[in-house]
Image (cartoon, rainbow, N blue to C red; front, side, top):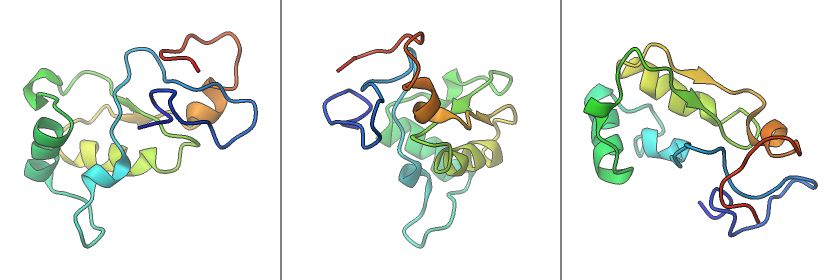
Length: 112
């Protein structure tokens, strides 16, 4: 979360610190069980509610959810978990922060 909030430096040269406005921080590991498998629907909803302080009922199944990370790789895990839990329109921003944070013309929150 340090990189998300711009408190820790980016590991890639040229990237600004912070995050996409309106985004929420949810590390992909939140959606994994201790054995490394994806959580089931009830577990994902509990993770959203308890760990991420998000009300699953407020996330409309028709609402487009876009997962991103540093490079588009680990966002796939969060997207798969959310899709399996009932959000069929979830997508992955494959350019993720490497693309977004590397552009000078994109707005960011908590710039460093």
